[in-house]
Length: 251
Ligand code: 1GP
Image 1 (cartoon, rainbow, N blue to C red):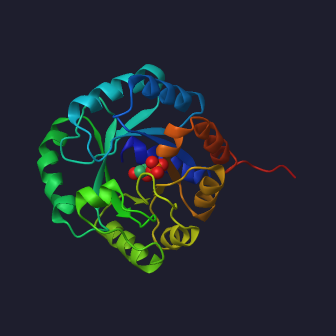
Image 2 (cartoon, rainbow, N blue to C red):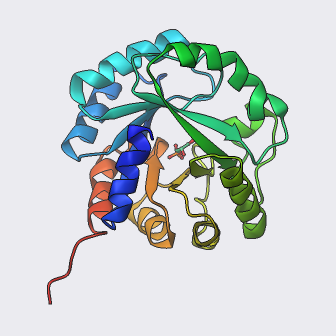
């Protein structure tokens, strides 16, 4: 099992929650260094790095900068097959199961597979479900796929379940970067009840309330990107929400 999943299962077994910050390599160096430092101070479990248009060179520089200030694990959140960089710790090997574009289900994977096999990256087979967050997202546009409608919990549940049956080891439900509304609690809890895999939730989480709702509904790991970029204090705020779970109340 990858370190990523091992660490996540350990937290789950202790009743704890986890936080990942997504860093877009298009940001300037100063903000990458600053966000990485805040992730270190607030014990953010993982940094994800990537975006829909990222190229390999920028990715490598960004990872180098993150490592200057952050001692945790860095995982690539790939937007395409060129985003393989052995200086990361691993890669979310995403299969865009909500879509019907074969390139994002298997096509790009086979191009990347020999490179990944030659690297020491942890490979994390991930069922990736795009959920409608109220506006068209870069992932949806670039992958030429439609997200699952926000109120179709049964479709999300069946898709995640099929992902598990295909051997994927975690589920990432994403409303997409900058989503107007994050994924609903009903959607999260429906999928969580039916599929016993670590559940990652991201997209449009911009305040403590949204994070708390997602964790309470069953998210094991929350991903914040845009929100943290615009308001750096969000990292500490959501880390505090994360820490409020799994704390034993003395009677
Ligand atoms: C996007 O889930 C991530 O893929 C994070 O989304 O940028 O909206 O926080 P935000």
